[in-house]
Image 1: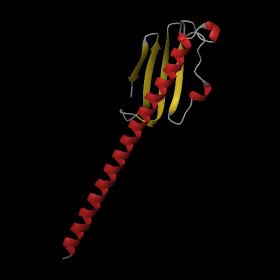
Image 2: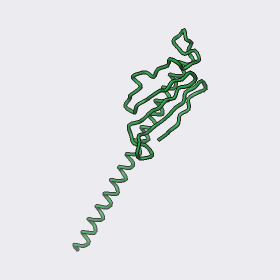
Image 3: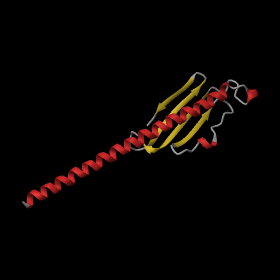
Image 4: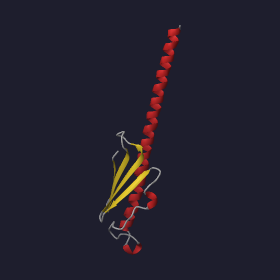
Length: 127
């Protein structure tokens, strides 16, 4: 009878370990995907701000057909979902967002890039 009890205890420990591992993996994937979606949403909104500046007349405080002079708002550079950076040129803005969670490669944080130009916003998930 003692060997059956030991077998049941070992089986219980193995099943519990597998359940904990599965729960950890599901939670990690959820946090990663949520962080990526937050970055995509935020970078799209920032891209819209850049396009508004581009389309607005110079007399109204815009770029008048140029992105020169547009600056990423300070309050949007560091958020709870990640850090944002903008590289501005005359005809486009390159946006980069780095999240707080480890990404798909298991090494570096979630990362999303966007290119904003006169025709629209192109978002690319890097990690």
